[in-house]
Image 1 (cartoon, rainbow, N blue to C red):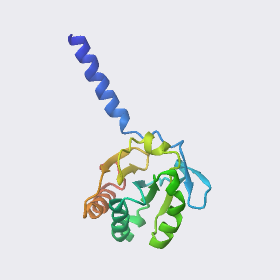
Image 2 (tube, rainbow, N blue to C red; image 1 turned 45 degrees about the vertical axis):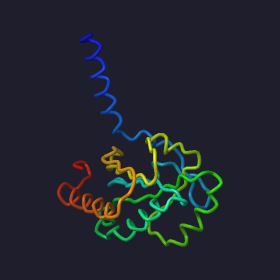
Image 3 (cartoon, rainbow, N blue to C red; image 1 turned 180 degrees about the vertical axis):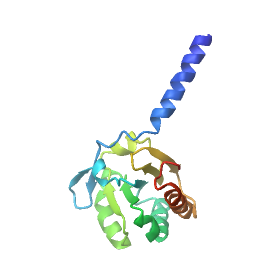
Image 4 (cartoon, rainbow, N blue to C red; image 1 turned 90 degrees about the vertical axis):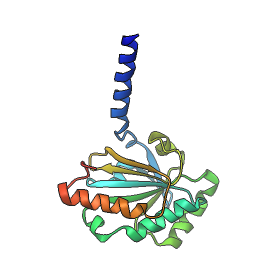
Length: 170
């Protein structure tokens, strides 16, 4: 009995440790123009914030709008990349490009056409925010959205980058 419990505890600790690594870098996304890009190609060496969203989810859209407003020049100067990934159903994809064009967002937007990246990262709802450090380790996950979260995310990144030069301490 003790061996079984010990084995389960060790297994859970191991799973927790590996769950924070980013294993989806081989996945592919579509650009708004229809070309395919590998996830590795859109990640910044300083850190990346991935935001999963849907066009028919008002919280997702509010989240992106408010992040656009909070995406300070200071954060951009550190090289942290903000990437929006649309996970709409296939019938909705034709609405993504005009929707994004009308918003005039400064960050890149991609479409996860098969939901492969969404599944690989365990994204269960939208909006869903994932913060990766420069080594592509997951530093933070945040499902859902509340007004004001975007400011906290940006402030946390800025403070971390000012203090240590990396996102490693988040």
